[in-house]
Image (spheres, rainbow, N blue to C red):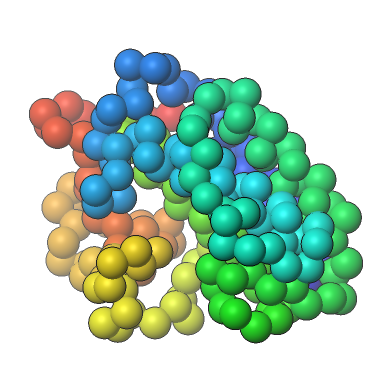
Length: 207
């Protein structure tokens, strides 16, 4: 893992924070691209994930309870993001850590940071789309996320309850005519329809 990967993670998390800053209390019941989750559910998941990954990086391991959803407030989000950045900044880049949601065995720290980079970037898109907006990370972040996403198996494990990803969405599912980009490829690989928008058919507003 390199300092560049940590830099890209901070960029992705900063992009997520910018999107989350737009959320109002009236938005929390909105549907999201994550099936079965409204925006309140998704944001609670994100705060909990930030805290869990921070504990994992700081302590070398963390129990499943460390990743439990935390009710969303803007203050809770900002505190969790700050804690995560601080924990990653202090992470020994040569060590292994156990991230129980990825695997019950030690993994290289770069793998864990890469997984959190992916989560931050893709869930920022989920939040933005729930708000009727678009979110496309910086090109370097997209390239890093694509590298993480490509090896993730697209198999029956994605169909199990609680799976982190739905089955990949084939190219022909794109109906908005904008053509292929690496970011749209990332979304499809992770089970997102790049054309998803909130019910009602209102156009997506570019950020």
